[in-house]
Length: 240
Image (tube, rainbow, N blue to C red; front, side):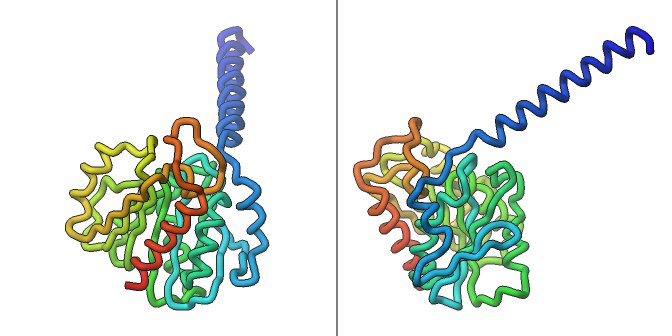
């Protein structure tokens, strides 16, 4: 083996090691679900939680409407169990997607494996997501406008035309992570089908249960109150 080939192989090996190290760091750099969320992994008296191939299925009292949820980027997907558990208790069964490396944009079409699955027979389907997961959900809707009855965005927006799909958008008044300028500009993609709700005192992180986000604004209401208002708004949107 000549000297140039040895140098080339050494460089390639070094690059592989660096990339593997970066991938390991990146895959472990995410916000973990807190204890209140993890306590719901086994379900409650009213809602069962079942593992499916790509996440969790929350089966409550309803059988007509279901919601497929994309988690926010770099957030453990189980951090959304509290809010989805409340929705399932309110009659909307929920599918919580587990995304590659906890980044929903890596698989925006994943909702199709559920909505297009003959094992699940619901009259109405809704797609939702938080933060970058909301963008992923909107991307799915833009590419499958005939698949769902509505889109529900939590501190998120779309950069694609959503056609005639009804959209519920919810964000907190203290949210410092949501780019409000881009959010306002994105309304052109929703036509006249937008229902917008601002939760006074709410912030970005309290849609999930993963602790404090140092880049976020400080909420003046509790996580439980933000979740209650959010769930009520979603149930009104779906039922009405």
